[in-house]
Image (cartoon, rainbow, N blue to C red):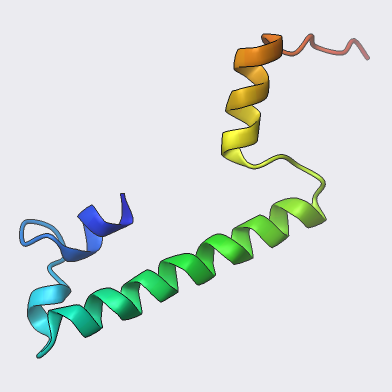
Length: 69
């Protein structure tokens, strides 16, 4: 999804604004990866599953039962 928003001509078109589209794609790829690592670290600190794990658990075990207070 990040590639669609950042690189294609009908969105932000960051690849076309630089002298080297390959270099722009590489920098954007590293930035997206770094952001994903920061989000994963934050989720780990909060002891929460990532989005893929949450979907997999919901599909495997069904919806969570709500706790009553």
